[in-house]
Image 1 (tube, rainbow, N blue to C red):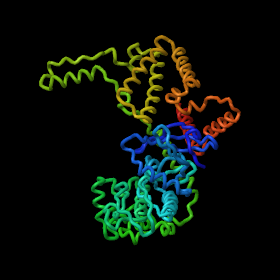
Image 2: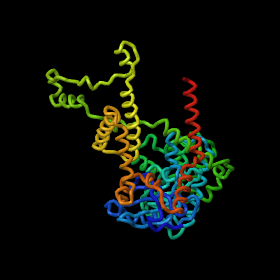
Image 3: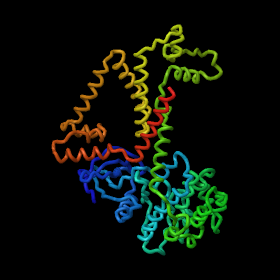
Length: 484
């Protein structure tokens, strides 16, 4: 399947930003397959067309279930669109957010799949050269996919070497750091894989816990004799099985000629064993990450900071200097202090008289704060934008409480959405409306309606991970209900 124009795909939402541009999620209209759309601004000075072209070339030549599929690329409005397989479970780096992976069988499954990808790449004469946990992706089926070939290179033969220093410090092999005339070959990827396996078990790649990046580079480059690096990271005292420690040891052989290749590592006892339900183990990790995100969701303080009179007084105090503090008269606006329900009850002589208007304001404030948190985490708002949103909250609160005009406010928003959805305002609507809202518009064609219905059914269907999360939420609600 090849995609050659933006007419063949529908963009849904932004899912990430990187050094080269923005990544969106979308579908191929003809078969409703989800895709990742990387948009690269060709007018930016920082755009490295050579690196981008290299990644596209390598991806287009790869046909492996363990490597992200490439569907095509094209240029529109000075932006390069690269269409790739959408991998919906995040990266191994993301899965480590709640903590390390203590189950060695799960690590062995990931390592085996990456080794299959490396075996394929190396047989094609390609080195990845930036293998790390961020570049090992997982989908919700529990499959492992190697991605990000921006610094990969093609070797003309198995004896060829590269002599450029690329990669990420903690995952780099000694020969890559030294950048000697003899260069480095396929086995640099094997060292990096060992670092990824170590990272999955401990939560961090070797040395990252207590050594700064540049010092780590120096220490790794000084490991010349076999066993130096194992001693440096105290491999023998690692809380792991002997089989796992031995696997790491053969990945961390300083002499790259003696280091195991992908084919030999696939026969190692740590990897070459029966791993029951490897994909199910990955799905459990995705569930663990989603639950962790729910439990640790918090508002960023700067998002909801509003300058008050106290801030002005602090500025005045600073201007006068510490020596003149007694001349400074600090004033506070007591009317701005809000009392808790308990304090209000006390002031009323103990009688509970809840103000429905205050409750509405408080509830709407929480809804606004939650929406703000999502917008902030997704787009990263400036201070001016945050202040504008806070002013907007005040105006909306007035409309739905003090003047009791909530119907007017939300009718206005409904009509505004409808106008932006009309064909005559299509261009403006595309810029403003969320893509998910745009795709809900009815189409006159019966075929298009059927396609839309299929699409809706596909995205509304609960998968295994979503079902688990739903079950978890239901259990929590039942537990809370039982306590009351």
